[in-house]
Length: 184
Image 1 (tube, helix red, strand yellow):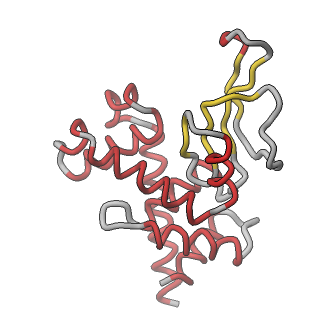
Image 2 (cartoon, helix red, strand yellow):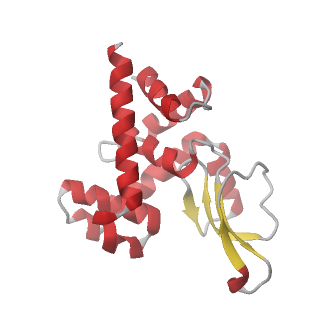
Image 3 (cartoon, helix red, strand yellow):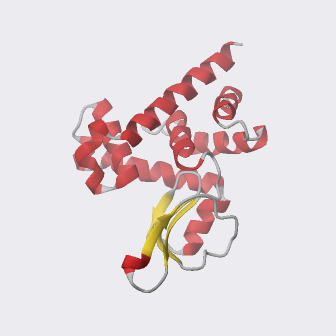
């Protein structure tokens, strides 16, 4: 089962080595549950980071004034936190975090298995949120994905969320590519 998924995600990100892909597939497989299947976790990681564990979203501020802050995303290659940066941090391949200590963020950026576990737990928390849990299965997943991406305010538009649609499209590609690889 691992090899088809490795093929599927390297088809999405051709710069990803088979070894890097295996690390992500193994981590997502270990974190997966019936409600948060491996293909879904891998699709979120594709959208959030293109499977680059060094991914970091943070506020960078020119002064102590919150108005001077802008959201920066992308790869941060160093272990030291970026100068002028402050939480909220969204870290690693699954881009989870928030107002967490820098050490916690760093762990998500250096321990891929841990990052997938945190991401899966975060998604499960949204699936269990009473506003999502009361919905039919498909809507429940859409609601949880919207919450995962945008928090409470994103729940009002979960049916039309571009993020949710993108994650589900990538999940379909991963499933299709893995099935193709498994049958050849």
